[in-house]
Every structure is written in C-alpha cells, then in structure tokens.
Length: 179
Image 1 (cartoon, one colour):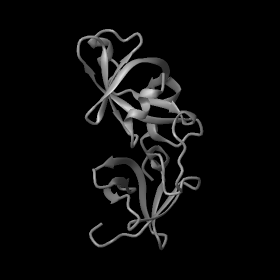
Image 2: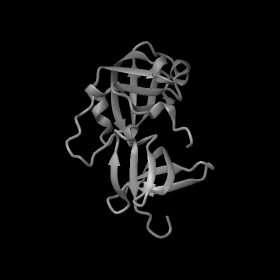
Image 3: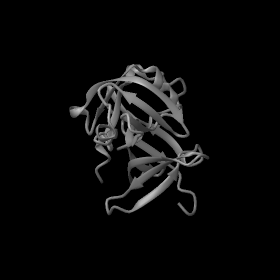
Image 4: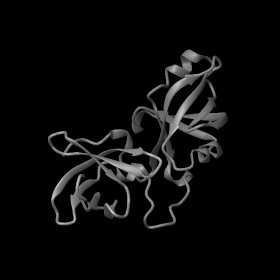
C-alpha cells in the first residue's frame, strides 16, 4: 500500500487543518489554505500549532486574521517580516481535535480521518489507499493510489462511497463505469 501524506494521519488529539502557502504583504502576514468546510472557524482559535510534522509543531498566537476568498490571511505573534512569513511556507497548521466543532452526523468526517484509509469495492477488491483529498465545489474527491502508484479520483458522494469506517481505516466504494 502506498504511504499516505504523513501530515494528515488520524490522531486522537491533533488534526492538520491547513497549510501556510505564502507570505502576504510586508508585515509578516501569512496566507493559509484551510481544509475545513468553514475556514472562518479558525479565527476563533487563539493559539495555532505550526510544524512540518506533528512532533515538530510549535504554538503560535493568532493576533488577527480574515477570510480572503478561499484562504485565511493571518498575522501571527513573532512573525513581523515577509521573510519570516515565507519561512513558514509549507508548514502544516495543527489543532487539537477538542478545539474543532464536534461532528454531528454519522456521514461527516474530517478529511484527515480519511487520509490513509484502505479503499475496497463492495465485493472486497482492493483499490488502494486515500493519499489526499480535493475540494471541487460540487463535492469532495478522494485521491486514491494503488500499489503501483496509479492514481484514481473518486467522488465523495453517497452513490460512490457506500461505507466509511475510520476506526478500521476502511472505505467501501461502488465503482461506477468510468471510475
């Protein structure tokens, strides 16, 4: 099975909820691509944790922020120059699961809970593992790689995804013609 993106593995305490993608302006603000359905939820969290992997994350205080299109523009304590902001590019944004809204519906999942799950057809045929997710506007998409590294894109819809078991790390799908 291919290795999933290690920044998004299921963890009892921490989830990756975004990534610093660029500096913004000359005063050290950063642009953050958020992988929550409602990115503005992060603005209510006073302390973020930033790092390439969970073991290297460090707390940083959010001084101010705003939603601009699909990204957050954030000013972080101690980051006062564009060079400092650009040094954070590529770093993941981690939050304790306890600081995120509880999932109320059995059909709701945090993307990070799906990364690394095995994908099988309803008949048990192995398809691969979820290595990442994409938001397309119409619906989210599972990016699945098989053992040979071949990529398959599966829409995260009830028609295709028939069962998700995050505890067993298994997703059952129906492959409609063309997938």
